Length: 319
Image 1: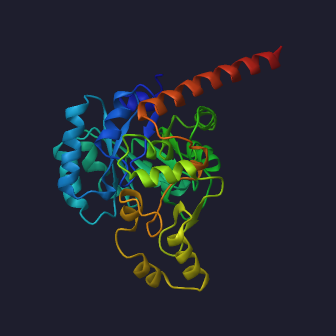
Image 2: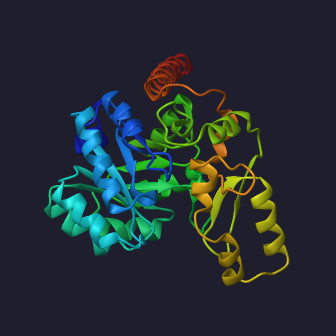
Image 3: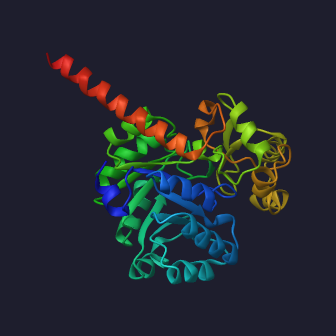
């Protein structure tokens, strides 16, 4: 498929694999990029030297286009950006911070820059800062989230109407039907996270992957709103946070309870009790661990089949 997003990024399929912490390493990214999508290395859980190793490992495994996702509030952001510019990473996805700080410098190095937003207000700011495309993420998404709690399918048409650059739909996208729906609402492509979190190539612990496969409807919740809204699976750690919030604990007290490395403990080390199990609301539809290539191909085949059915249905209605 050749649309504005595919042309911009130099990819075959308008599907971006999300740069999830402790999940999105070079193996997952390389498989997705080699299969026609945009593979993404998630820098949010990497020290600069580790990120450099992942970038070079990706290039040893693939000649395709790839991206690095960078939270702009990252404590080692200067060193991270130095690496991205020096290594001439072709696509950089920025999030959690002011896009004005780095967008121009990244673009001067030759990178295409996409910025993740949760509202029209931030979409406009990202476009004004020079972002080549906007990733509009609804509150269905896993991990850190916007405070607006706007659903993806409410957010996409508003952002698409407000900006001129391509818009990518993120949050709750887990089937060919949802890709078709996102495009009908104005998106040029989608970002998929949860499905790839359980891919064989995902860096996540097997315990975490199996927990996702077993998750049912209502298994996730958007919590930590006094600190940084985060969607995660309900477990003992979540219950402790819930009790603190209901008791009126301050953000400072909750941050102290969180400590360091909660996401690593849950996602990478497989501690299903005390770890922070970040994942999207769409997790209830995940039913198996399988190769990323298979996930991507099935998504696209479903999209094409559903688009064909819709065109035929509309034609029949006109008759």
